[in-house]
Length: 149
Image (cartoon, rainbow, N blue to C red; front, side, top):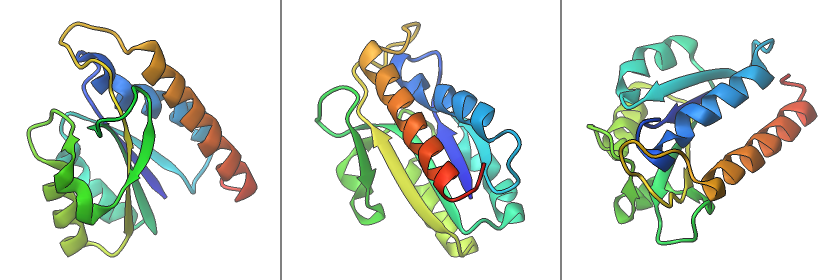
């Protein structure tokens, strides 16, 4: 399994991806079954690494404007990505997913976290940081139950 976290740590809550990657990397550091990638603002640069690893699943984590409360976490169906404002990055995540689907056979899951502020120079808000921590705890529990870590 590969977890590809996306975001810009200089843009407030958009930095949730790098924060998530950092925390999950510490948990999965000794696992050969879980690979954590901080895709930053250019997740498309890691498509070669994803194809090389040949995972069964790729989980994308990103800030997604879902008109929810700050910190809300939601699975975004690939078919519905165009209904949401996903991230602030150069390439739309829908293009990345379509490319990966045409070049690979792994299952792709997008987990979105509702940002509060994505202002340049701001820090991650408390609501979003709490959601990142809660999601880390969920991943840790699942990884333990599946004996992945």
